[in-house]
Image (cartoon, rainbow, N blue to C red; front, side):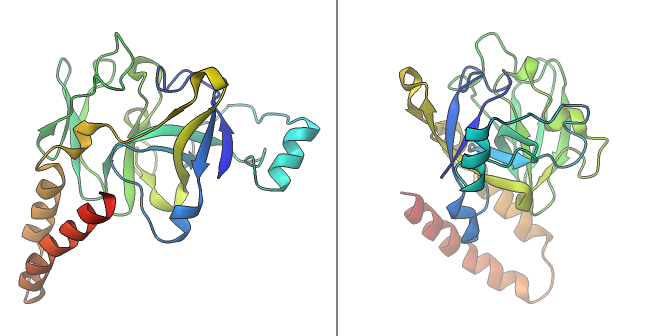
Length: 227
């Protein structure tokens, strides 16, 4: 685990400025990839934090960084929610909801009260490249997320290997202690299946049939593991 401090209001009300979250850095070392609905910390993909000053840590912060309990002061990190992963198609029209693989997301459980899903910056539909993720802040009208960086390399997506880890707990202040589970809307039937079916449809050659046969087994194992 590593502690990260929340520097902005982009994830309110899920996370507030000054909160300390604990981030699971170990799981990615074993090949796990970011999943829809998770809150993740990631390094600046390039240009997202351009012009932002690098903080000047105090001696305690430097020591905690040295032993791995806090991030390096030289790193510029961000925290957002994963909305779509590699192979997904994601989009949002003004006045509408975020749509992933043809499924509308019910974001009332985490989006900031009074926010709209994307009225300030509609986008897509966008096909997320394999090995990358599309991220958005919960405080949509105050979050410079994937929507606002489509002109940069990666077209607003973040490479999986730039992800530091998943935020799992709000640890400080103690009055705000809470876990950060994946919202139920990301478990709705057909959300993953739609992306998987699209991937199978794109395959060609004798290997496609074998992949199609193996896919339900893979999904079942993943569901069993998550359960």
